[in-house]
Amino acid sequence: MQKPLHIGPYRLSSNILLAPMAGLTDRPYRDICRSFGAGLTTAEMIASDVSLWKSKKSSTRLISADEAEPRCAQIVGTDPYTMAEAARRCADQGVQILDINMGCPAKKICSKAAGSALMQYPKRVEAILASIITAVDLPITLKIRTGWANKNKNALEIAHIAEESGIAALSIHGRSREEGFMGHAEYETIRAVKRQAHIPIIANGDIMTMQDAAFILKYTQVDGLLLGRITKGRPWIFEEINHYLNTNKVKAPLPRAKQINAAIEHVSTIHRHYNPALRMAVARKHLACYLNTMSTQHTVNKEILKNIFIAKTPSEQLEKFSQALEDLPPISQKPATQ
Ligand SMILES: Cc1cc2nc3c(=O)[nH]c(=O)nc-3n(C[C@H](O)[C@H](O)[C@H](O)COP(=O)(O)O)c2cc1C
Image (cartoon, rainbow, N blue to C red; front, top):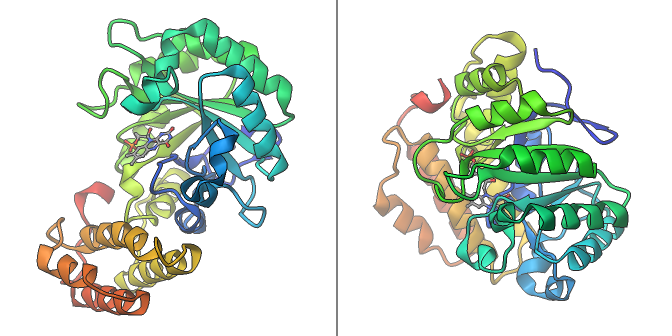
């Protein structure tokens, strides 16, 4: 049975949460993951420089007040004052939990001493957290890696700072910045952090199956898990993992017809959510993921994708996508969810 996970005043409906993923976890994605049981979703990361929020890209990333509660957003930055201002603006816009990104490995972020680069500067981390926590009356969460470099995995030190600063929950991706996305995530560091912590700790990295989820929860004793890439084209994985954790039984795979309905509904929502210049391109990313997930060959035939990608209107795209889904060979559950 899952232990209840609280972040600030919010008791989450599940301790299996959607990891923030820039370019993916937009509103339609968050909504579909919630509908399958994600306990929390986080909006795509936004820069802490609020003057950039008017750009087309950032404006589609802002949270809206009609989203399911608790509404969580993530900011990235390096300057304590700028980040505090961003936090205030988030609070004004209805954000209820604010996550600080100190895990991003991307060069363009780290070169500005933001994201995971901040793990090299514990004093700066302390200053940023103090500044944000003083600025707003929201639960503030922090997302980190195991460290900047393999030789100095200082997640324990940063976790201690986070806790002392008043952070409401800490999530840890089990890789250092040096590792990027290479190799396999490790959970020893996360386990060590959990042992010393008095705040909720959330583990992340390479959780691909319900058995992975159960093992990592048991091994690290953490309070929750963040699922990232495995959810692409497979939002129903939340339902499968929740069921397994709560009953210790494997849930029968979601029937193909229901998978198809969910995929079509998701793509239709993307068409409605984005402006005409963006909607078909955003939909392409997701529909390719659904086809890959549902294809028995793991990677869907390129010709099928090409045929959908040349669609000229959203309705043509949706029609071709629906046809491709109907034409797939019968379901055979992939090892990833068994
Ligand atoms: C495309 C993509 C975008 C991501 N964007 C963010 C982000 O904006 N903020 C963040 O904290 N982590 C981001 N991440 C990292 C994920 O939240 C997560 O830590 C990582 O993917 C490991 O988890 P997984 O193995 O379950 O995918 C991103 C990952 C991917 C693949």
